[in-house]
Length: 220
Ligand SMILES: C[S@@+](CC[C@H](N)C(=O)[O-])C[C@H]1O[C@@H](n2cnc3c(N)ncnc32)[C@H](O)[C@@H]1O
Image 1 (spheres, rainbow, N blue to C red):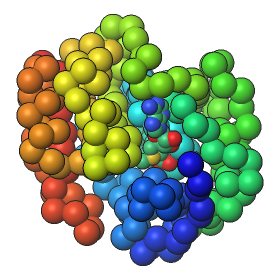
Image 2 (cartoon, rainbow, N blue to C red):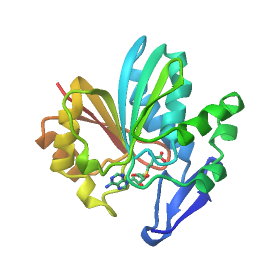
Image 3 (cartoon, protein in one colour):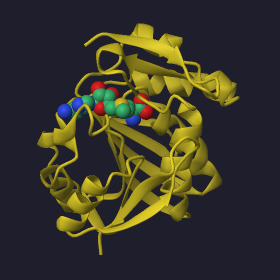
Image 4 (cartoon, protein in one colour):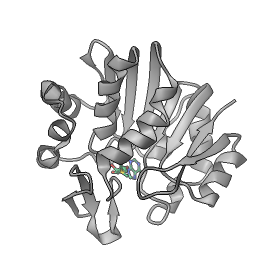
């Protein structure tokens, strides 16, 4: 599938899959969306503790990077697990402008390290951030009660309906710890019902700019 880099409404870049007319992030603003959905509605529920996060679709590493930037402010020690079947290339990473847009020049090396560090291994990226990237299909994720928080950031149901099913959400439910939380930018009724069918309690929350709603699911 052909990928190209585009600029979104807040000035930050993202990747577009032209054949699908689908982007890795909202066209209204990649950084803006990632902060709203994953940090404000997800990570900010936690403070002063160790936290295991699973990201569904590591992609550009934007979510991992902003999670690192926020972890310190919230006294969090993060074990970050990114699953990705089609890793981005070095050339693509070089065209992303997250470090400058986030005014995080002090951490330029750290963002590079997130991408350069080996897959299938535990990498200590900083004192409070451990990163494990696994090149896997989402359908191959297994284990039980391992994660406190899931960033569910797959492509939309319009282009990958098979990733928004009861089957996948039951897998997500299984790998979450009790009281664990899943956040996603999606808001479709069919997605909410699939989450509820496997046992999640689901809330509809205000979405990022350009999107009315998003979903947050909790395992009780
Ligand atoms: C919407 S993008 C988001 C990526 C990432 N969260 C980011 O901020 O850049 C979805 C990601 O899921 C990956 N992906 C799509 N289908 C997959 C599958 N079946 N298994 C694993 N990864 C998949 C894509 O390659 C892409 O990186």
